[in-house]
Image 1 (cartoon, rainbow, N blue to C red):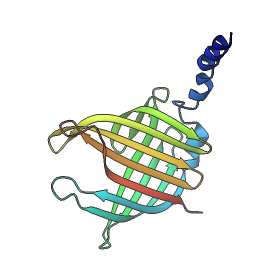
Image 2 (tube, rainbow, N blue to C red; image 1 turned 90 degrees about the horizontal axis):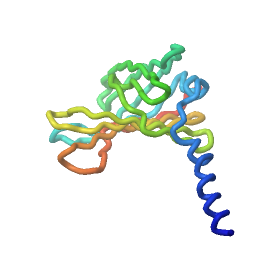
Image 3 (cartoon, one colour; image 1 turned 180 degrees about the horizontal axis):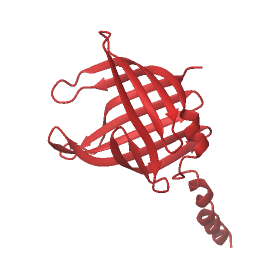
Length: 171
């Protein structure tokens, strides 16, 4: 009898626990991203240089109702500024992400308290080599972290980090 109860609990309990995984972002979570952010970006060069450069970053996120627009301003160590604008849009019932000028499959959405982690992947090519790209976006009250990883098909199973952005909300 005890085995039956234990088996039933193990069968029923994972449902509510998994309900926090894979659920699409809410409208309120997306709206919370709107505003001004500042922080740093560490970029690892491609090709043979593999040099890491740290940039100062300012970000303005604008809510456009059906999407968010990210206006980045990067300042390199020499003081040169670069401006980049990307649209952030989730569609197909929360299964697809358009971000960083590319389309991704959302493979997981995780929640831990007020923090949300969104993991999205796509296949592509970099430097004439087949690669998988992974975007990990983690945010919560006052923080926004974004990591771009790349895994070359002919190298390894691990993603290496091409870009890591760490931001805090400016009040």
